[in-house]
Amino acid sequence: MIIIQPVGADKAFITSGVRLEPEFIAAMRSIGEQKRTEFIAYLSYNLYS
Image 1 (cartoon, rainbow, N blue to C red):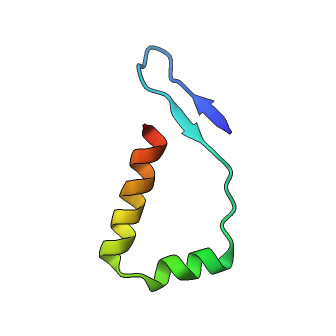
Image 2 (cartoon, rainbow, N blue to C red):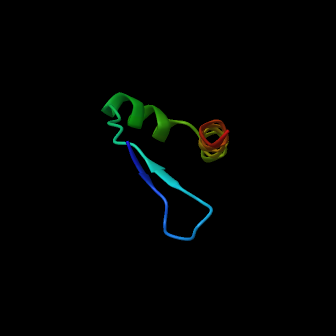
């Protein structure tokens, strides 16, 4: 995990080296665009909370 906070900024960036398995990538590609967008929004919200 890498945490970056630019000098003078009130925000920090957090990155993580996550490896996604091919099965997960295939499953994400198989669902519709709307469901995929909702899922990513859900993940983003919960990661930032």
